[in-house]
Amino acid sequence: MEGTELIRLTQLPVIEEHLRGLKEQIKSRTEEAVALVCTEDTLADVKAVRADLRKIYDEMESQRKAVKKSLMEPYEEFEAVYKGCVSDAFRDADNKLKDKIAAVENDIKGRAEQAVKDYFQELCQAERVEWLTWGQAGITVSLTDAKQKTLSTLRGKVADFVVKVAQAVNAISEMDNAEEIMAEYRQSLNLPQAIAAVSDRHRRIEAEKEAAERRKAQREAEAAAVQRVEAVAPPTIDLPVQRIEKPAEKVCKCHFTAYGTKEQLTKLKAFMIQEGIRYE
Image 1: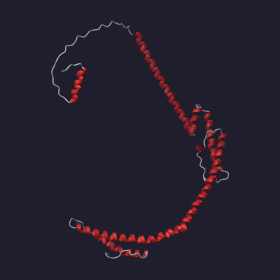
Image 2: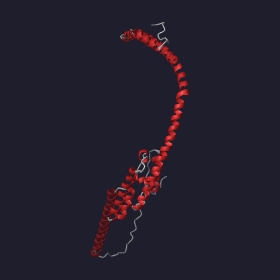
Image 3: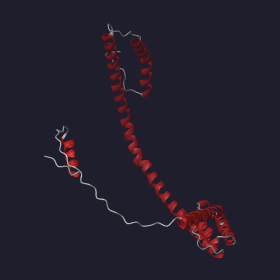
C-alpha cells in the first residue's frame, strides 16, 4: 500500500471500485494491528504500528479531500450558473406572487373582521351590554370564514357569545348583592366564579364582624370585673412617708495588682470609675 496512489481522480464509479479493492487490505492490516499484545516489552513496537496506520490514513484522507474539491469545483460552477439562470428568477417571482396573494387575503380578512365587529357592537347595544369588548369575545376571523358571503359562521359565534352574556346579566339583576356580583362578572365573564367570589368575600366579612364582637365583649367583661373588685376593696389610707437616712458606709482601702489584656484592664478601669471607686 505504501508508495502508491491510493485514490485517483477519474470517475466516481472507478474510484468506488478501487476503494472496494482496498477494503480487504485495510481490514487485514488493521485487524493484525489490533491483535498485537501490548506490554512493557512490546510498547515501542505497538506505538510504531499505530503511527504507521495513522500515516496511511492521513495520506488517504488528504487524497479524499483533494478528490472532493476536484468534484465540487465543477458542481459549484454549475450551481452558480443554475442559480443565475433558473432559481433566482423562480424565487423572485414566487416571493412577489406571495406578497400579492397575502395583500389580497389580508384585505379580505380585514373587511370581514370589521363587518363582524360592527355586528358585534350593534348586538351589544341591542342586548344592553355595551361594556363588552371585541377582545373578550375571543373570536378569530380565518380566511375560510372571511370568504363566506354572508359571514354566517362568524355572526353565529358573535350572537351566541353576546346573548350568553346578556342572559347572565339578567340573572345577576335578580340576585342579592347584584352590584358586587356584576363587578366580578365583568372581569371574568364567568358567572359561577363571580358568585363564589362575592359569597366568599361576605363570609370573610361576617367572620371578621363576629371576631370583633367577641373581642369587644371580652374587653367589656374584663372592665366589669375590674369595677367589681374596686367596689369591694377596702379603702386605702395614705400614711406620711418617713424618710430614713442611710448611714454613711465606711470607706476601706486595699492594694492589689491586676493582670489582663489591654481591653480587660480598660473595662476594669471604666467599672471602677462608674462605681465611684477611687484608685491611685
